[in-house]
Image (tube, rainbow, N blue to C red; front, side, top):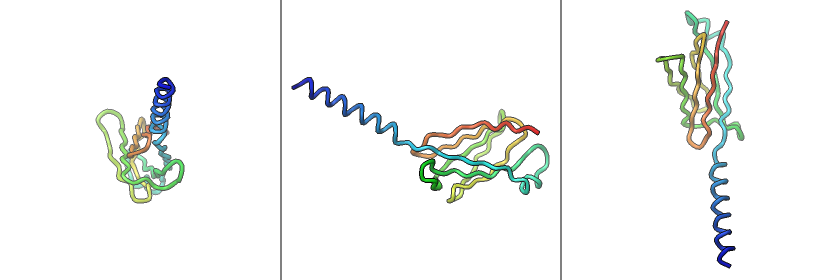
Length: 115
């Protein structure tokens, strides 16, 4: 009887850990080049417009934090509107984008732009 009680407690603990680890949803990120906005910039910079939504429901995610690094020392924080939309400047070369939101797995991607 004691063994079955201990076994059941271990099984419940394992099931709880599995359910907790599966609680995080995924972010879905889309980004498109904007030739109209990019035409206003000089140099090797380009404007991209993106959207961050819940991977399951396709609903915008509140309180998303987006940052883009353009190599060593250059770092931009981006603000997202209520619909999950954002606009960022990308440079011709290495761009690293990081997106985080509470309750979601972080997104990290590298955009290496070249002509």
